[in-house]
Length: 115
Image (cartoon, rainbow, N blue to C red; front, side, top):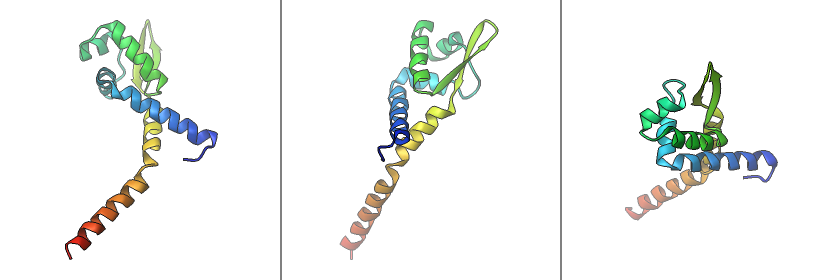
């Protein structure tokens, strides 16, 4: 990873997204959102925790850019934010070349051991 501001920002945001999703309750909230935007009360019922707990988890997910909120009448609806997923994907993509090279080397080594 280069040390320019953009790469560091992507890495930081990508790690923040992965850390946010490491919590099982936040992951359940996140997984409840692809169908449609939902209010805190709906998410609390879907996940089985209090509205207060959902609000705290949503704050972490918002900070990680994994969910966004928009007002809808007197309610606030939460939906997935594609920016956080892109950050996590971009962060993880940096590891693919070395992982694939190691995999290819292991296959090559295993093949030459059987010859």
